[in-house]
Length: 151
Image (cartoon, rainbow, N blue to C red):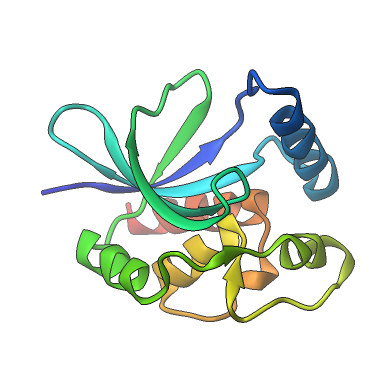
């Protein structure tokens, strides 16, 4: 069975622009994470990751290794890969919601046709449309608490 995780990025990008985005996100959300993905473990040790990324312009999937020096993985027990794939198929290719990400901190309205990372992940995990309320750091805390409750 392919295990599902919330992958939380705490690394430093080589590109200055991305480091700036990450730093701003961490500062304003008061935590160590600047991005989240839903990661489904593959047999070769890599992960199929789903999210909405400012770097790639919106909702996308890609296969990548998740270096433990840069990523924390929180198990999402009870979340099935099919659930994530189904949600991805409903909205892949939609744009990144920069104003919604800012709105998570300062109250700007969200765009229902765009997503920021933790919004997309929350919606996929919980089958909700309320993910716009949560930053990467808030979602990580929610996932950690759920993981504790499941064990």
